[in-house]
Length: 299
Image 1 (cartoon, one colour):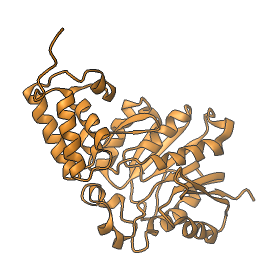
Image 2 (image 1 turned 180 degrees about the vertical axis):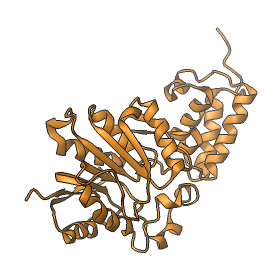
Image 3 (image 1 turned 45 degrees about the vertical axis):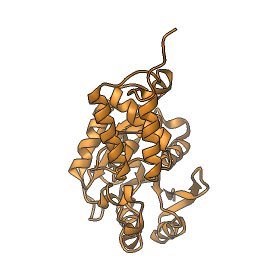
Image 4 (image 1 turned 90 degrees about the vertical axis):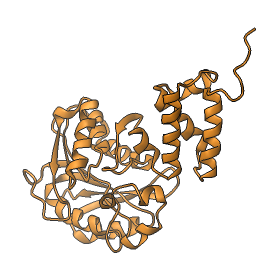
């Protein structure tokens, strides 16, 4: 029978144990999961393999790199930026500090989009606009779920658009997505009016005065322009409602993600515009009002 590795050897089991303790002491809530993900990233393994091969030893360079990544996470740098990717809609997307990290609740926008489309997802004429695309997750998933649709994705950040383009290539939908650099807060100048069946946006919605109250991994690392929604957090919604209407086909839908306690105010903005009906609110898995939608009136 082979002897077990010495207790102080540099095995997956031992470095994982130490990393969990370090992360926990630095107030990382999911310390064990994040330690596994960091270790798997360094070794090029799946996180499940960390458990399957607990006595595998690390090389000196692997151990050094792992410790560096743990230190970065202890400084509250987001895990997604450290490993360079984030899962969304069961797919992996590249992310970096130029784009907001996709959140699970944003998947609700895709769910609403599919619900509104019903059995029409395979129609060639469908056109979709994603306003403030960031890493491109909404535009790319929409292109995947609507295999014949044409998608337009806009963002004020050229760096963000570059990330989105890379993700579109990774998921083989680049030929059906047009990326445009555009400031959503100014008058829009898109190719033609009445063009889109669906307009999606997860815009910046944090009130400016609350940015300093955000958790440090958001406040200190994620791009401010993707967070700051102005004095009351609603600046982008007001501009989008006004600018999107001429580009929305009759019977087409405008779908927003909103921040906590903002759904009612966003609905009021939609109601005040005129020409929109079927204004609805949908909750996320935590029971918070998260998605607000409206239809361009048929009559």
